[in-house]
View 1 (cartoon, one colour):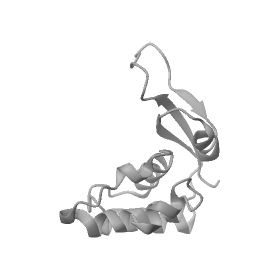
View 2 (spheres, rainbow, N blue to C red):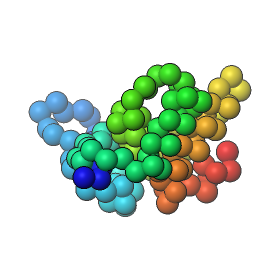
View 3 (cartoon, helix red, strand yellow):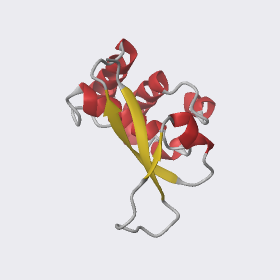
View 4 (cartoon, rainbow, N blue to C red):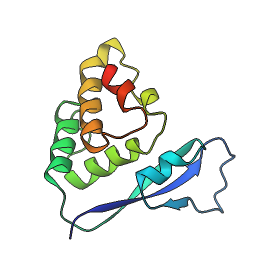
Length: 126
């Protein structure tokens, strides 16, 4: 069965309350449409990744911002989709001189999975 991700998100502008569950979202488009400053974790169902997902994960952990940090496809893909859920994704990549090449590779992997991200054009321009 193909892998599908859903999202559990909380508003970063609200005080953290451990007694409340994160709010579920079925898709990135629903997360992006929400005006709040959300931080999301992914939930995976299914077990067959697309070739694009595999390629993006491999790219991100072989040459991205944190090479070698993630060594398995499910974690790598989940992490990238979690990053994709951020509407302010440009803030994730500050392109520090010492890590500029790695950040650009991570952005490329990010855009492989989320080409329609609200800040995709800004990310491509970095």
